[in-house]
Length: 151
Image (cartoon, rainbow, N blue to C red):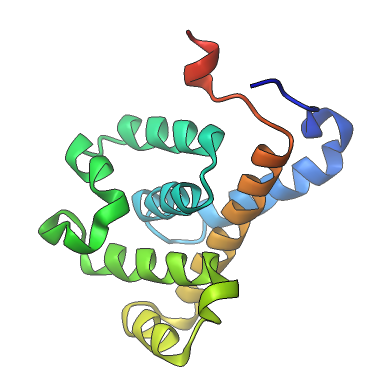
């Protein structure tokens, strides 16, 4: 895979704006592990190799067990590996990421609201939206995963 262009160099102010949103999410009060699991799940759905590599590495550094990472794509069958909040966040992330298919129905909103207060749900949705944006940038401009560069 060859990078098409470096959007950080071409549009540094745009990249900085995305970074500011990332900073907001990370200080929002949502648990960092939950946010990173959501980032990884969104990246799985979007098939973003660059982000899959990055967020998997981040979660490993955070001490998340490999079993949890291995079962993230099948989190609904992961039993007690995933907390109630994580299951609610992952369900919301999938629904919002697949908005064209799901339309984000009232049932999904009600389930998410049962687990998160209004601010948490808005912050979670900002995180999901941000990762969808980052995925589209990385895929469109062919960011090379670190794992590929290391080989």
